Amino acid sequence: MKQIFKIAMAMYMAMFLIACSEDDDSNEDVIAADGIYNFLGTIDGAYYLAASETLTEGSLTFVNNGTQIDADQAARIIASGDYLYSLDYGTGLLSQLQPTATGEYVKIKEINAGLSVGTNTPRYALADESTIIVMNVETTPVTDDAGDVTDYICTLRLSSVAIPEMTIGNLTEFVIPQTENAKKGATIGYHPMRASSPVISGDKIYFGLMHTDIFDPTVPPPFRAPKQSGLETLVFDYPSMTNGTITESSAATGHTGGYRAPAMHVDENGDVYQNNWFMSATGFDLSNGDKTVIMRLRDGAYDSSYEFDVSAALGLESNVAAVGWFYVGNGIGYMPIQLEDEGNYYTDNSWSVARIDIYNQTAVKLDVPLSQLFTYENGITVDDNFYMAISPTGGDAAVYEFDATSAAADAVTEGLGLDGNNIHVEGIYH
Image (tube, rainbow, N blue to C red; front, side, top):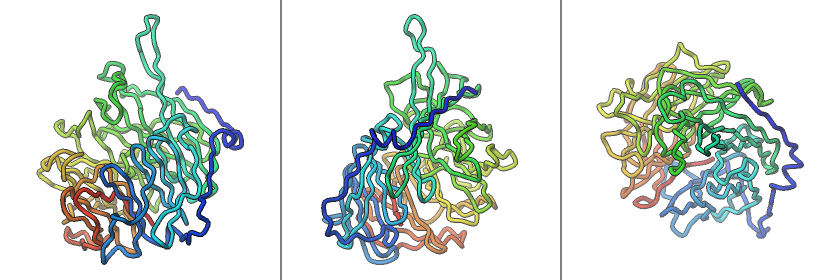
């Protein structure tokens, strides 16, 4: 496979890319982000952070409370230690935030993380407690003598951000190979357009991939059509970031990188479990018999002995789709699921939540209100309970507590009340 690696020294990158700024208000009584519960909410396209000391009682409002954060297109949040890290998706700026005793959030440092990988819309993820990985797939057209596009070169660009220092480290570039499977059926073929949702297991790092027909550049991802058949995951040796390969599975179809919720998790045995996302154009391609699955990867490859058909396990009359899930532990996870019979995946309250058991391959739809969870980012586990915010459009919203020790559909308790109607809570961080 053709590949290119380039390493640039951290000091060199820092000279051009880092623009740190200390907050001017030195009198703020800052507290640790992991000492409270932090909520990300959206109101008419604007993003806000607000804090609560509890998840189970009382209420939390964003009205005249909390802090509006920078978000050109969207805000993506990571929690680690004392800080929250907010990626302004649209400018590429990465801000280090810390809550205060008054309920506000102050900006401690800010860097242009997107510039390090050549885009203002990078993806990013927490690799470990001291490292954030920033990702971008850069596409370069290949033309013939007549100037017609005959192919594309898709280059994954990765940089690391040391936290809490907020310094940018080495840059890696890798030309993602287009597999024979991905070349089938389209004008030029299905090219990898995104790498996302990375996880580290042992000496391997895995990246989920989104493929699209790149021939129509007027339509931005993820709305290009169609998707490739089969599943693909990009694997490197870690931490050297060498020996990049594509591992494939024909068990299902679609993207493997999630959307805002993560698609891959590592269990206590070091195995990687991954869900698929079979989006095509502006909707889930549910009419072709596609299914939502969880696949297992071991030692850098798909494990052909394992396939968890979540759609079949749920046993619902509606087709079911998913764009990510959350792992609690001991084989138990929670997956936002879109029900085709309930309407559009993006505009309607057509999402529920399923408890999944990846070891016993069972799934149950939980008793929660239908809501809009396509853009939902994060839930948290406390003891044996998992907590998510459920925000139905036009209805009441709340934090819901799921008892991870129970497989009953009604093992759900409504907790902290949240703003509803036009306010959506996109994640809880701790």
